[in-house]
Image (cartoon, rainbow, N blue to C red; front, side, top):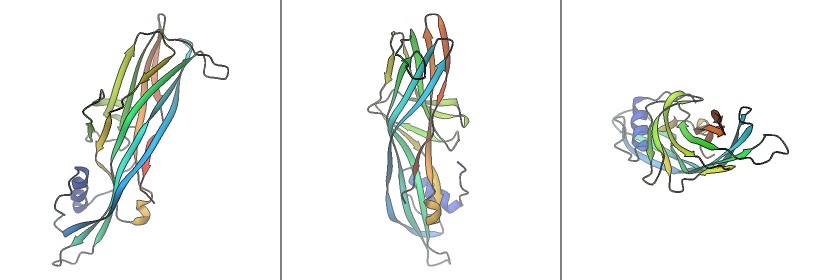
Length: 237
């Protein structure tokens, strides 16, 4: 996603709402007025596949949870001492992820007629990053979480900051689950700022997920990434 060019006044405005506190308006504006605001929410369940000829297994990987982002329509009202017109900014910001859950089912093959099969052990890691592809983004984690934040090589953005959680199991199973009921992951940034109602309708913010698996059957191991479509939220129409 290409980040729009922001003027100095818009940067000040964007930084204020991203931090959660709308500070004093830019020098060219006497005051600001929130015309409308709210949140967009999307419950999701996405599925990916990891096939391995080496261990003769097919891993079906499910990610689920809730994605949310805030939106606002704010007027910047100029001072009577200048000739600036009132400008309305449309913003979509602070994407969040609630209760991310990872589940893995293990089969003998990926096609029809497949049967559940066990693994000897499994390492699995779910990771999430903002599709803006910037290393400077701040990621906030709720207090009750096992996720951590760090730099990682991602499928779409190269090496950027991600929120991730890894688990390891030596139990012989055909199903594995990683649940995080109390977890909230927040990307503290303004993803888009527009000054046109028609352009605002095209705005979206996205969180990109991917999963790493390292599976074993007996003494045979195989590993790889499972990629998914980005989880996107759009400005309300």
